[in-house]
Image (cartoon, rainbow, N blue to C red; front, side, top):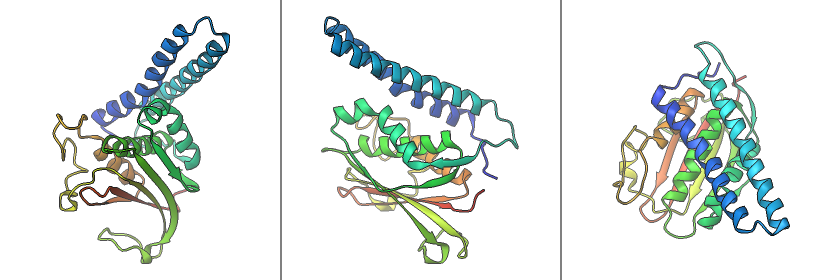
Length: 239
């Protein structure tokens, strides 16, 4: 069974960040609509975008409330279509993607058994992280492959007889010294000052927490100036 427990701080971060983009989209498209209030075509276009953003916000609020009501032993794990999760995320980040000219490329990601709201947050944190730490036009690549445990080279304790789904998130960002990779998954630990890059330092810690809750593990490969690659391994037989 997939574990669900996340502490209050992690939960608050997850809830607030998930809701920020739909709210920003509603405000932005409303402003665009008011600027073109005499243009019936523009009014219809932006009105539809506002409606979709409001519907998305309603869905997020419902999912977060459902998640907050869970007690120990309960489970909302299900088979998740990861391609749908990515499309939802791209829709949520529409404005950010346009403003920063982000290019996201992905192969067929397939399905994963887990907690949808957590997997969405995992994708969101990793993609936002790639965008934030890019100097030029951000490029994010995502792919998936099934590997036998015996064929995975890692220091982690894995079952050599079990299959794992590996998700890889790569980017063209600023990267970092791989010798410091042991601290990036720790809460409130930062590789850069707040003056350089905003943030709380908890996003990647939550990523590790979510992967751990799903019985998997996460690794990172990076080099200063050469981008970063996050490798996530999930046991395939979770159901």
